Length: 204
Image (cartoon, rainbow, N blue to C red):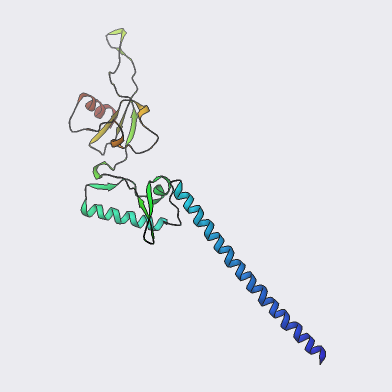
């Protein structure tokens, strides 16, 4: 009888110990999760400080939905305008934004570039190489194209082209912001000798 009582007490103590250890591990896990959340918030704030949007504050899905809404708004109210970039990944890599608090809300104001809908077609950069050509009637005489441009930005789907006097004036971006450069967009509707040459020889 004494042996049975002793074994019963040992079993009860072991059960209490297991429950205690289980409760301890549960509490420790909760604290580890909270520490991880604090570290994630800290890293996200550091990203904002260096000009990068954190996925903690704005997810890909939410940003893509916002871009679709803005595109629908432009189609309805300003049909001549269009989003220059529609992929959300671009804004996480390169976009400019302002972040501020309004009451109890944290607001991120994203700078989204717009362009004319008629200018949304992809453009190609063609460099101009001047080659001396011998005259057909004189072997010692050579002619060379007289052109002050080094390149032309062009698309067969657009009514405009952009002559580039110096390639060094173009940066590494794949977007040319005409408001920040001295380049002048020209219309293909108004024919000039240079435009005619380009249409006949460079864009078929």
